[in-house]
Length: 323
Ligand code: ASP
Image (cartoon, rainbow, N blue to C red; front, top):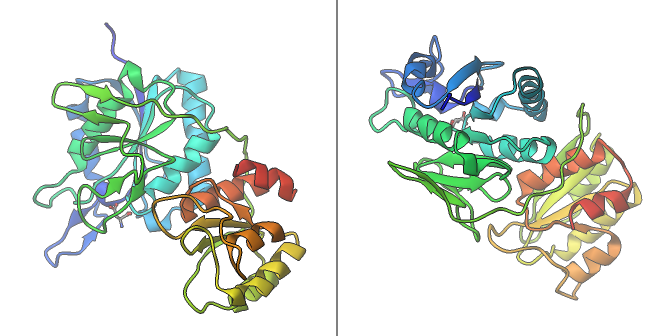
């Protein structure tokens, strides 16, 4: 059987960095992953692209849009059977989710990274890259949305999050778990994900910020947002979806100005809902027009809101996206 054709896109991150004598991890000369392409040739035929080489805190939604366009181009012009993206782990889940929301392709798209750079003991870069390639060439990965593969686990873009600052098992899907595993001999899926709606997007120009709620919070940050150039806000609210009472006036001000306010829980398990009936409780917030997200974390809700706002500023349309 002939080999599948994969697009391999390197974007930077620890997976493409090395550690110097002082212990600082940084990009140095040529991407070390380029030296390892021969290790991959047993698995597939590759087209390699490196549109930018950035630590992932430097990645913006416009870089994510660029990746979407590159994947679409190679799909249309070269008939690729899948794509693997190497990426810094800090914002990896955001790029994966952005692609999941915006790519209308059924071919496997797999994002991977590393927690240890190329010359550190126990470096996980090449290992994770080979695992990602194996998943991307698996027939079973077809039609499962954008996947994140690290540390022998296969996660969905929508559920996965970085849970540990340094551990190699950092990527977890709280509440749901991985949908498959990678073993020495096989790529095994044990769950089939429910796919999200896809959104068409060709440019991104909206500003959305995330604000985390805390005990004793007042309205000042919300008042400030209303006077700055923000088009939307995501609030990481308390518990099941509540805020301190001092925030209510500031939220009302944002909603009056037609600025959508999306609420997620700052707990990393569970879904924010309109359960509590006190001042600042979910019932009051929902009645005011605050949009309750469907279990996304703050950084993913922000991307979804940015994508929604690039299509419409109608609050009902935006609210429907989060149902
Ligand atoms: N700070 C690095 C980055 O996200 C971390 C990593 O890649 O693991 O680029």
